Amino acid sequence: MRTFSAETLLRSYGINDDATSLAQIFGVTRTTICRWRNVPDRSRLSAFQADKYACRIGVHPANIWQDWYNQ
Image 1 (spheres, rainbow, N blue to C red):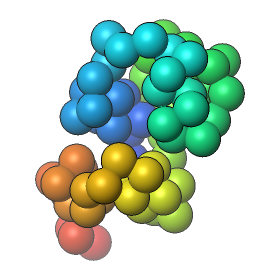
Image 2 (cartoon, helix red, strand yellow; image 1 turned 180 degrees about the horizontal axis):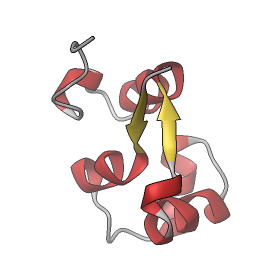
Image 3 (spheres, rainbow, N blue to C red; image 1 turned 45 degrees about the vertical axis):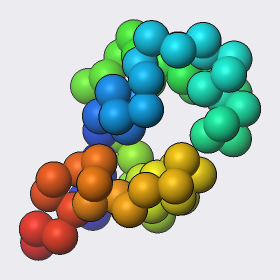
């Protein structure tokens, strides 16, 4: 199963933004945002999650993850 980096998602939106604000934007807990920031190698998103979070910020996932269409 393909996965995508949560860190890349944060970088595309604003990795240094307040964790509480980011949590509200992405619909996750503040703890999740902190994990995405602090443990990027273990913070992977499924294709479904990646699509959902990209849509929450109004962009297509291919605009965030350059390998979105690669199989």
